[in-house]
Amino acid sequence: MRTTHRPVRSVAAVAVAASLMLGAAACGSDSDGAASASADKVESTTTMEMGTDSGSTDVASNSPASGLRSTLTAGLTEHVYLAGIAVYSAVNVPDDFDAAAATLDENSVALSEAITSVYGEDAGDAFLELWRAHIGMFVDYTNAKAAGDDKAAQAAQDELADYGVEFGDFIEGANPNLPSEAIQASLQEHVKTLSAAIDATVAGDADAFSDLRVAAGHMSMTAEALAGGISQQMPEKFGN
Image (cartoon, rainbow, N blue to C red):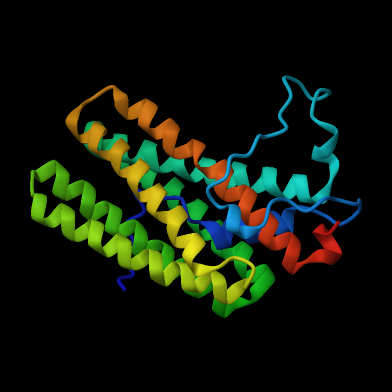
């Protein structure tokens, strides 16, 4: 697995472990909370309890479990959009790419630090290595599509598929309530939706924006499943 440090097109999907730990670190245990859906619901639909102003949030959002899910959704969604900005910059405004890539990498590093705070330095370092390698695969895919090199584009997709297995195993190793197969399925959807956004961006198609929105929307489903797995692993903080 490569460790390419070119933070441009992250699938975001899968900041699963990092965002997972970011949520765990950010949410306190000062109130009772109901557990979110279990890990086998990676592809199930979730509804965010978001109000139109600070006084209209759903009552459930006050619970640790709901707060965790909201934090996960925010972190994962942000990563998708940062990736989309980097993609757009690379294709259309190359002079702005370095700044966009640097911002995306700051997000990656912060996520790895969140893992470190819960699972230790070795786990945080392992996550960051995997995460940056996966970003490099999306860089390769984008470059191949821009060059019209179908063979190289397929090779990048094959690498992403292999990465899904490795990352799924990594997540299951950290939390047995999040099975590798479920993580792999979620990553496959991320690859599919973010690749569609990349394809449209390279082609100069305005659908790139709506495609990116679809990719970001998938994050709420992933966040719901992750929150459920964390609730099972850490019932003292997020249990019923």
